[in-house]
Length: 137
Image 1 (cartoon, rainbow, N blue to C red):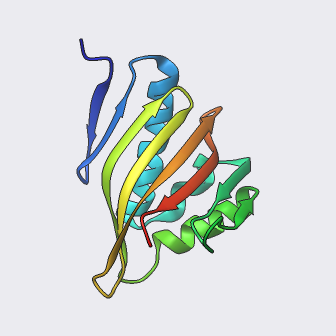
Image 2: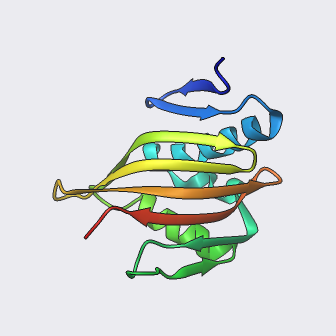
Image 3: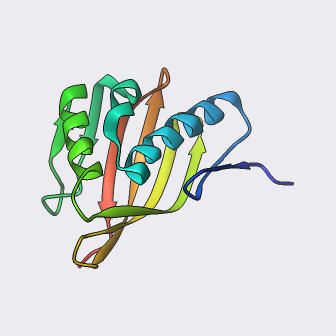
């Protein structure tokens, strides 16, 4: 028996989730969040990010910095979404309850890429937490 469902969206985005309502809500928030990066248009971030959002960034190694608060989180994600010549490919997105996992590949303008994962948490229809990790040496 299949315990999760796939939802297909434009720009080749698929968000898999468990069939319960909380997972579906989380999947929709994360789909909209991913669209910001796929379309390179951060306008919707203000509707997606909670006032108390906290991001644990991938850099500097080994532990990363933190962005605390809605404005700081939006500023970071706006910069990433609009970086000239760079783009994201989604590899896998899965939502379960208020949690989601986003596996991605980030391409820089020089053609080099890095693979990573974000562990996301959604509450009240908004993103309240994100922890980013990358594959590296």
